Image (cartoon, rainbow, N blue to C red; front, side):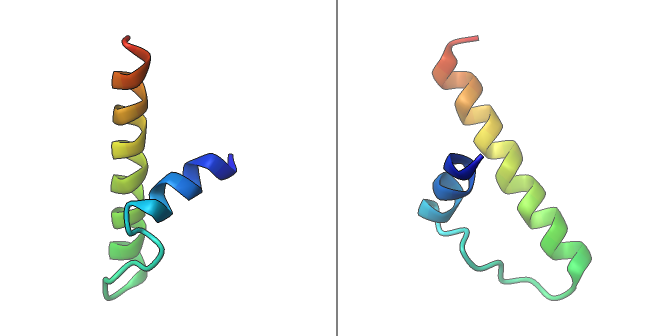
Length: 45
């Protein structure tokens, strides 16, 4: 699980620059979706 957060942190995701919890949740969700898409592409599925 830690490798997911390490990858997001390397992309500059250590700080989320949004106002409000709803927007921060959305931004974090988008980062996780991008991580999953990159992982899917890497695995060649």
